[in-house]
Amino acid sequence: GAVVSQHPSWVICKSGTSVKIECRSLDFQATTMFWYRQFPKQSLMLMATSNEGSKATYEQGVEKDKFLINHASLTLSTLTVTSAHPEDSSFYICSASERVSSYEQYFGPGTRLTVT
Amino acid sequence: QKEVEQNSGPLSVPEGAIASLNCTYSDRGSQSFFWYRQYSGKSPELIMFIYSNGDKEDGRFTAQLNKASQYVSLLIRDSQPSDSATYLCAIRGGADGLTFGKGTHLIIQP
Image (cartoon, rainbow over the protein chains, first blue to last red):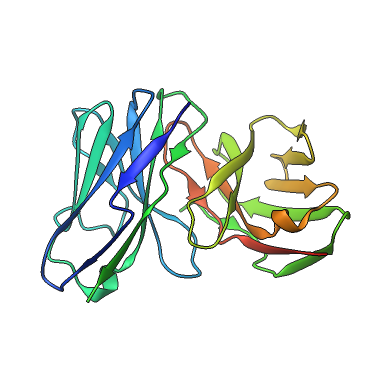
């Protein structure tokens, strides 16, 4: 149980275009979903927290107009990178919690984004 | 600003020995503490979490927490080559997202 999927697993896009990444909880309802970014040889950095039906809360330094997050249902959250630039190339990983009080976050397999 | 500090390594340990990984954190309000293992190109996988002072054991793994010293550690007994990975320490306050350290690269030498 507690499986989180991401789609696509990797994507290449041209500079200036937008790309959408989906995060789904397959066998549980995710009250909260988190989006992280990991640059090569760096650790995961929390980008934003999204709760179903609410606006996402972004971490300091993350542009909310560039990284659009939608958490339309208890099983799906999407991250759209708008007007992508090469510096947005990174490994994007989502995680989901079943309950607000849950200690555990279940991580998706990640999406490798390359902007050319 | 929450900070989590780890020695980046690499930490090299002979097969069958005990690997000891350490982590310190800055936020005294942190409520739960996690150890994740990450293989290259993959997302992290949870090894253990701990939220009370003391030790918590799960198979070959033991997590130790000392809130007064703001210190968390992970011991891996009978280390195997498959344990070679980057180990990430993470903290969480309430329902917040995780704050990760930069990770310790562990190498188990056959």
